Image (cartoon, rainbow, N blue to C red; front, side, top):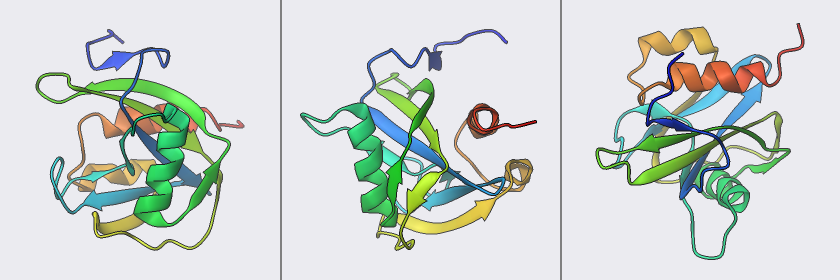
Length: 141
């Protein structure tokens, strides 16, 4: 695979984070209610706040958007997003989370899917590649 400007090592400073919540070979996707990425299926997450680490940002965003507490975050990759590459999104994956899903107003819908099902959804760019990498972290075969 050829590296593009959309992908950088996780050590690249990030200003946003998302998390692949993995449970029993499924991942939780959300449908964004607002721009950017309104009406697209993607991983939950958002922008970093002053003084936060990128891991703290990831955990806070999951709590705010879904009401879940996450732990055991594993770095997956960093993606450069936006036409001007303004956002550097650190993607994490975890099988460690607890709580009941209580979606915020930012979430239009949510669902658990198997990675092979994303072809039927309108998603953010390269979500399939991101999910492949996230699931590979927990592959026990």
